[in-house]
Length: 131
Image (tube, rainbow, N blue to C red; front, side, top):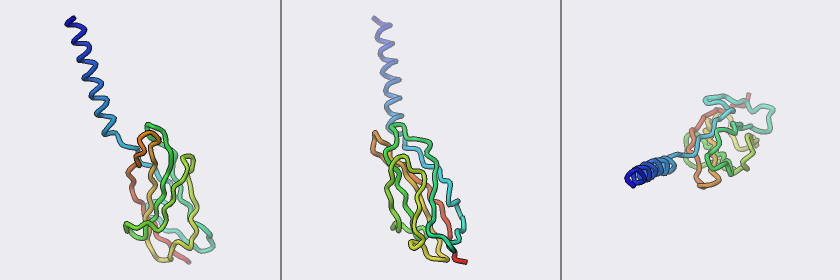
């Protein structure tokens, strides 16, 4: 009986640790490919600016969507905000959204299918020119 009680307590202790870890485990950040951080993009002769990211790491519950946001400077109001399906790894944004000589920041988040939570996101910056 004592042995069964000890095994049960050990199991409950381990289950509690696993449950607590699952509460604090966040949705992994998306890894960006382009435009590179601190990049300069020449808009001359282009119709669009392409944004690319990797499709891993995936959230533990599976991915349900991505969200791309582009900001003028380090502002808080997105000039572009697009929610994309879970298989997307790039999007083309028309150059009319951008002004030559300006700096922009961008980020991509992914949403966990099970929890509905969005990942945190780093912002990368780029400057556009028309030469």
